[in-house]
Image 1 (cartoon, rainbow, N blue to C red):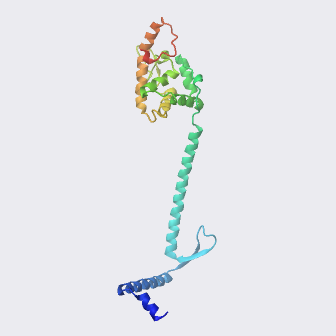
Image 2 (image 1 turned 180 degrees about the horizontal axis):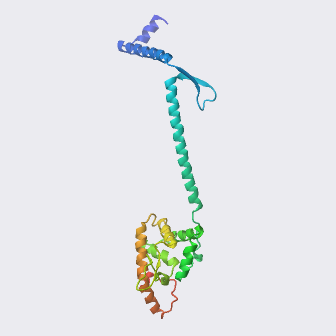
Length: 240
C-alpha cells in the first residue's frame, strides 16, 4: 500500500477512534485466550447427526439446558393442540342435523311427555329438539321461550307442569327443573342467533311464568270450547 493511499485512508480518523479500535482488539485477544483455557467437550448434539462439535464445557451445559426447555415447551404445546383437536372433533360429531318440522308432534299428555323425556337420552333425539328450537326465532326472549314450549307440549300439558314438580291446589304437578326437554330447549335458545349466550336464569323465569299461567288459561279455553279437552294446536298463551 502506498504512503499516499495510507494517508488518504487515515484522514478523518481521530485519536479517539484509534483508541477504541485498540481496546476492541485487546478484548478479542483476551477472550480468545480465556476460551482456550476452558475444558472442551466433544459430544453429539441431537439434530446434528453423528458429527461432534467442540465447545467450552459451561457453554455446552447451558446449550443443552436451553434445548431441553425448548423440547419440553414443544411437548406442552403439542399436547394442548391435540386436546383442542379432540374437542373440535367431538363437537363436530355431535353437531345437530337439521330437524324436520313436520316430524315434531305436540305432546298432549303427561304420560307421553315422560316417555318423550326418556327418548331424549338418545343424542339424535336430544339434538333434534335443540336444533328445532334454534330455528324458531322470536321477537324477544320471552317470545322465543313461549314458541319453544308450544312446539313440544300442549296447553293441557303445561297446565299439569310446574318448575319444581310440587303439588298445587292439591294436584300433583310434573316437574320441569331436571327435565331433559327443558335442558334441550334452553340449549337451543342459547345457540340461536337472536339469543346466543342468553342467560339460563331468564329462560327459567319465562318458563315458570308460562307454566304458572297455564292452568287458568286452560280452563278458560275449555269453557270456550264447551269443556272439550281437545285444545287446538294454534292456541297459545297470548290468546288470554
